[in-house]
Image 1 (cartoon, helix red, strand yellow):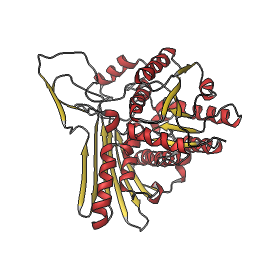
Image 2 (cartoon, rainbow, N blue to C red):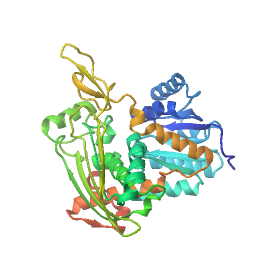
Image 3 (tube, one colour):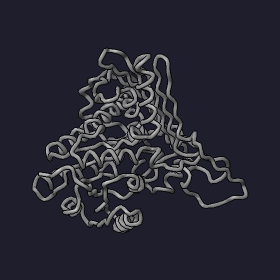
Image 4 (cartoon, helix red, strand yellow):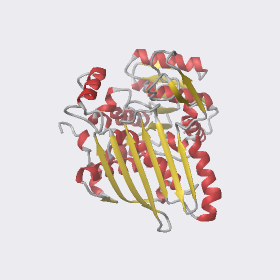
Length: 414
């Protein structure tokens, strides 16, 4: 039996890619945590992340040559699953087996978005976590974005209490495309931009529409309508760019995934009021960098946020040149001109507050506000949107057909 609260939560990372380093940087702002272990398939990447842990003063991180070694380590209390989408269910199965056999003392697990590639996978992730008696958290950072936390608190306390609950949430996330080749492969990632980024948009919108303190399931999904398109990356010159960057496994001439997606989701609150989510996501946006736009509308009020509308901006003339990088904003597309700067990306994007919340909930044995149950609900919406786009019609919920549904772009041999 795990004695709680723990003075310090000792976390092990599974995965060492881009998102793992984002999580690591955010941990600087989290108390009562150490990153004590890491596993990935690359020894070089493991060593680099362990060194970064030490540099950031987040503890002494041991590298593990196998997943089982990490799961059975005496100095790891909780696992952060940050590996690619197609590996996550296997990681969860290994964790369940190690805990069930008494070889692991891990008592909590957090998983990066999306929880899984299909409803069946997501449901199995939840079942395995609960069967092993693990506390579980779904890592959806936009719910914890500092503008979202502050904006929702003000809207519901001052405006909704006087004029009535909000009824429409709009969310958009756009950038110029992912870093790693597996994101572009429908079977490995689970889809295209709809799977990769719509998970953010629908969940932050659901969160904004949910009354403070109420469970997310207090809003019932009634219908979903989705559209997907290939706007940029199937054009011959851009398809060739992907082939040159990532090799023959990313073939957007013959096997593309969507680079644009639109969603309309209707919901019903506890009193029978109709609510609406409008969301768009794109890998075909060329601007300063990653752009997140959020709106929340109610009877007599509105909330607006644009992540690129920063207070800090830098101008560099043609005379200033340098190598390409992302030192100003994630997915940065230029090195000259007038550019917005996010001085604390990990904080603004929500990673710091997200990890602070998960660490404290796990350390004290409390249920996080985002769990694998919420991750499953998000995947159900995503699969509904893919199915709607495939049949060209609005899909009513509940939709039992989604239990074994796989999007067209994720079907092997499709």
